[in-house]
Amino acid sequence: MGNACDHRAAAQTRRACPPRWSGYAGAITAGTGVAFIALVVLLQWLRGDLDWIDAQLSAYLHGAYGLLLRTAYCLLAAAMAWLVLGLYVALAPVACSRTVVGLFCMAAVGLSAVAIGDSWMPVLAPDAATMVHLLSANTAFLCVIAAILLQSWYFRRDRWWRQHFVPAFGLGLVAFALLLFHVSVTSAPPGISQKSAIVAIVSWMVLVGRWLARDVHAQAACLPHSRDNARVNQP
Image (cartoon, rainbow, N blue to C red):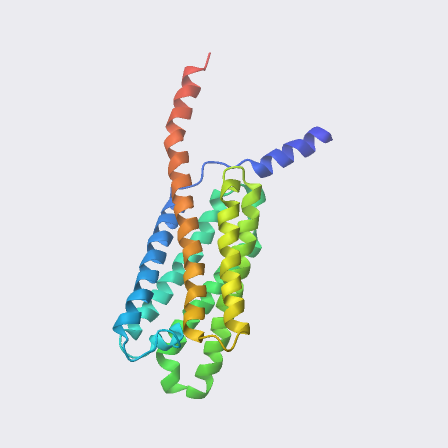
């Protein structure tokens, strides 16, 4: 009975070589995140009609370059969903959680709803546009923060990823603190506080995406050597 339990525990902590697409998911997410942050920074100069300290990022969804930012929102949402699926197949089973997958996917849906809703709803349904924007944005923020903290905590359970627990969980706490500051301290400039929280969240995605791509590449590089050794050691 004890041996059976030990075997089950070992199976939960052991992971197979992750599929190659999970590494691509990490690399593309990292690239998408860097491009998104660069676009946000660039818009602070391009949109001279908006005060970069007071204007929240949602204000940049309309007017000049609004379509570009809305497209970037949708691409970031797709990258977010792909990243969590890549993590789900790359991590040890004990470090995976369907709750994390669901939270990230809900955040992606919320982020996409912000971009798509702000495209046509302010004109066709102005009374509902504000409500849809607030619900979608709050869903995206709450779900992604919960997902980041939970997934970072689960990194401890994977012997290859536990080394990343401290920086991942630390950055997640920073993002949570910035978002809490933005929501609770009404006297603070809303633009810079919200953008800081967004940059912290996307930075977490970039960091984890890089780790995932590097981890999958390293395991794929070791796989041929393992097969060669297996053939050599055969009687």
